[in-house]
Length: 307
Length: 289
Image (cartoon, rainbow over all chains, first blue to last red; front, side, top):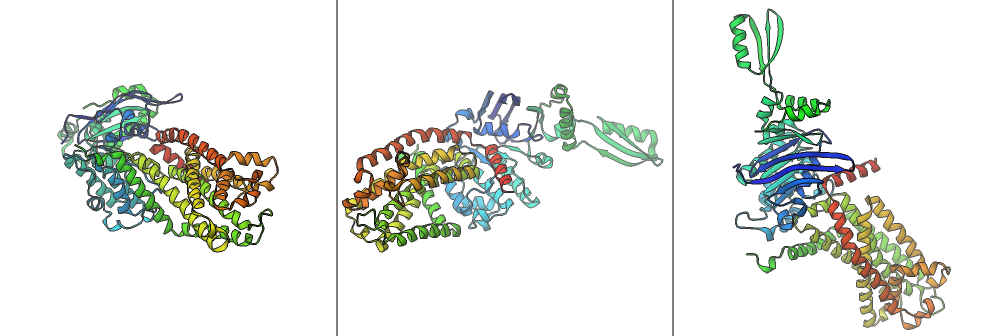
């Protein structure tokens, strides 16, 4: 479902607070139906980026287009095509789950088109996020995980073309997390929704994202699929084996050839063979560590992965 | 393609009215709110009970008869100004406002709901005081239709004079705690000096001009003007009711407030974002622990 119409276009985005440069020339884009994950240490500018795209924060410089509109000038018709999943705290505690969802859904009715009927059916949506049996409960009495499911439901009730999620699965148990991943895949694959989410969970990023952006120090230090990042960022595979009771480790770019060589040389003496490809976590940690240890320019240039 | 009845702003405004009524119903069925409503109003009704035999500055009327309109006026300032400021401050902190902002025309619905809820909440107090007055205070039952109509006019103008300023305070404060303090304390002071429970003619001379600047005094005076018989005017400043001054002062507060509030609300709304709510949440959680 990934097509070439740019839904999100960001070019040389900069954000300054006083003398502090939070975003220092960020560029990326996303197409229809694409799932983008933004990873990065705290304070890297993830939330700032997402808030600029949502139109909640005015950038210092750069070009930004979401659904062809500058978010700083987006009107309510534009907003109706957006979904924002925010971290709720204790708002609307007295409302009942279905009542609140129905109320917020009704604002989207005037923006319904034959191509995308708005809003979504509230009861179907409650079932989709696993809240059907809690529909008549008060929002204030929901557990943390149930509340986050409601946040997700509110974010997508208007059948958005672009969905922004800032750390959506914080506080989810494994079941809720899996359900949430199903919802994201469904939206992206069936509805063609473009999804931009931030997370700290690398496994989640790997599972969900078509593309991962790693943001560090206000710059994108890597941009590619999980596999591409693993291959190219810290692209070495580790080979471990033992021979005559002695253990060896070797890092290589060509593991298969190395292992063939190993067997050709030592044959049956080789034991305990283990070939371990770098995980996303390895790549991520390596990247962020290198960045933070001051190799800023080297990192930015040498590790940029463009697909 | 769109039918005229589906104008998104009109739809949102209607949803706001519904939201106001839903929230009023939620408040009336909420135990904490029920306790608050009953306690506060019982305290004021008790004041009427104790005052029923006192004489109003030698006019021959019961002091309680002058307190009923005072309570009704004070109730308008509480509902229009104090409640609005506090609700706005709380709902900025808890993210209600940010949710409204991320919904198309959600802010229209939100603000309409605030107005509807403030009017409904204030009307509830007004009805309670009028009914209590009818039972407890001789003279309230004799108020002519003209008096009730003026009461309604002062009520509506009073809401217009106080709500925008409540919204301004709620939009400017940094936390819900500050919203409570900055709306509650001035309210207490103004009620104390504005002749609500005790005629202003008994106040020190230097206090009177201060009270006369603010709507609380004029809300009380306007309500007395509406409900009390002409002869009770002897207890007013200068010995007469100041009908035109009442409408002029309240009107001026309303006009200036309504001119300023939208701009300040817009600036406030523009600043709302996930991280703004998050940092206020952290500050509030820290303040509790």
